[in-house]
Length: 362
Image 1 (cartoon, rainbow, N blue to C red):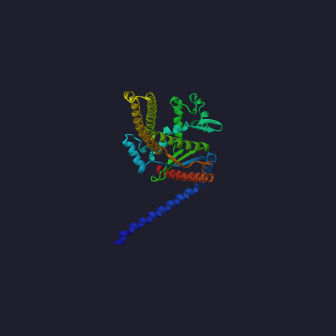
Image 2 (tube, one colour):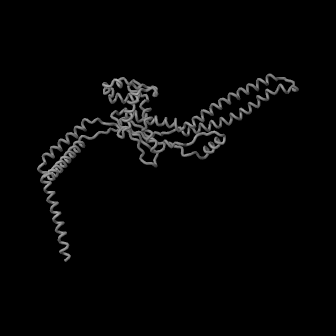
Image 3 (cartoon, rainbow, N blue to C red):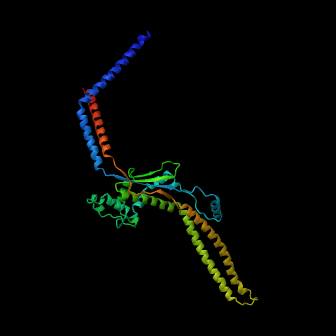
């Protein structure tokens, strides 16, 4: 009884397997009849792939690696010194740096602010000093493409130009340059591991010298932006303390001169006339007070300078791009093989689905 129950399933399995083998043989036979067409399309695809590789312009990759230096919080003697400064009511700055941590820094380096600042940096090309934006425009022959646009034809990006006075057309051109240069294929900011603070800037461009120049200047602009932003509080403290110290020093010098002048006025004075010696004593009090104030201010000023120096570095460059740069171009043989395979595969798919469609319609 069990054998009778199992036999139908076995027969069905055998029939299905036989049908599958027959179908495969049928399709193989059909494709053999189209063998010349598949080979021809494969040859055409291979020729197209080879032609693409032959005419494709090579690109060059400039890579700059750097280590981000961050203050994790002062300790030891420096921490005690900062605490002493705080006891005098002087804020000598904190470690901060949230905007420059990890992925924030990578996004910041691709921001329009820093890319535009980089584009407006002056560089020497040949015997001429031009901006990086002008360098890019010339390399890509954009002015030839602007001949039919009179409003763009005469646009210039001169070194040391006032960014706030740029026209709408200049802003539009900078926006287009920014989009082109921050494309993922053109600019990559990579950090191999979150536990490692080493980051790399990768700039890919058809012009080898431009890739190197843009990569180095982007790193420089990021470093300067850090110094301006993160150390702003400490720098303001230094400037304020410096002005106060200079002011008190001037008052102290004046008081010392006043003491000398008053001493001259009462030289050989009769000791009985105490009132006439009062101005000299007042000047001496001013000298003592200003000396005490100046001593504290100088100590606070030096502590603030230490903090400012501690916060100033952003980028410790490890590797700079060196000419010749890494050249990237699709190989001709590789393109020929891939083009031929892809064209042949697409032809097979077209034939298979075309035949299936005809059977469905019939």
